Length: 289
Image 1: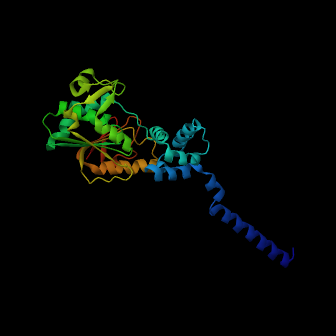
Image 2: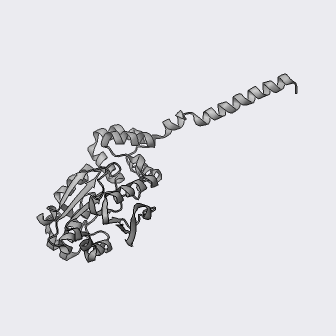
Image 3: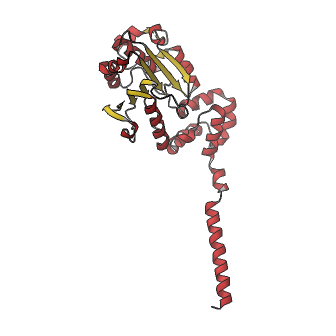
């Protein structure tokens, strides 16, 4: 090969190599345009403030696509105009993606632990401040109120429930529950703390006086250090991306006072509890050092 041919070959090879790298590193407009999931998430966030990109994509995308397939919608972004005008469809979607599943006295073993001594320990400072993080329609907060009255009578108790779904917060403020919500609740406790109604049960004033509810995004809330003796965040983070889950757990630990207790769901885990100053005292229950 002549010197001229060698130089020509080198220039051609370099040009092709740079073009290949540029194609890999540059914006993939076709792929971005085809990713209707991300575009839908941005549209939904503008519509109602819920950011689905913080959740694990495979599970959430399956939920969305199966939901809209039943509506005859194959491309997620095609649903946004309809969601802006169809309140019932938006409500049904939010029920699907925000996992509003709860019940009174859910996970009874955890309530037994709290009533059996943990609440008395937490009340040693003369009060109990509790946070039901991701409270849905309030079943956890009202259950905690009843358990506190039973376990630590006379101790000042304040329970804050927060949830990103303003519809659920509005429902929680009513203190109304269905018969299905009470399906596993102790009969004696229901009769003591709730009034029977035509549609289910109504929390009595004694419970409602201990609770308050606010709209709040767990991914943005940053409560001050040592704000609570007890935080319950159960069955809330299982669909969060791992990094988001770990950051949330760190903020929850920061919000606990020393000696405070964090309760998580039975399918959840804290990646490095010791690094957050937390130690397991019962399955899925941690105490802050």
